[in-house]
Length: 143
Image (cartoon, rainbow, N blue to C red; front, top):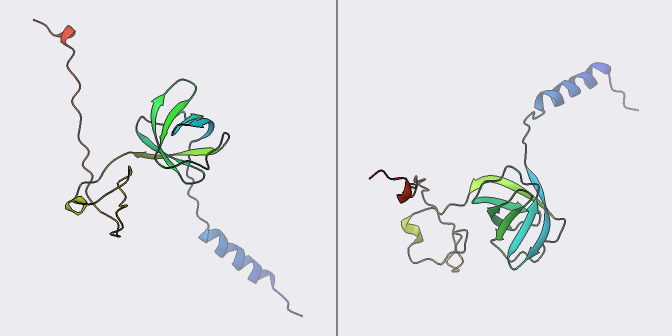
């Protein structure tokens, strides 16, 4: 019969406590209210930004475009055949962006800039964030 001493158990517990990962990640989630014609209506994504990528529980990516007081309109970037009412959606915190590189020249990519031309390999590029100038309101100009 194997006997385990109290100090061995204590050491094992201490090691496990030291190895414990204390990171807490808060993820805002929502629920699909309606889906059809490559648009999903989501309830509960209160902190989502316009143009932010969201991920459905079955893996489809969408872009939040229509922010209303009680729901968010999301354009699906995939077939979305497995998305149903009541499915879970989470924010990614990333705005939809397209990287720029010479590796993209002559390639066929999908809406998320992933190659679909059968030539293999992931494409890498640099994403430059550019400030977009606000349109000038002619009515507010002083003449």
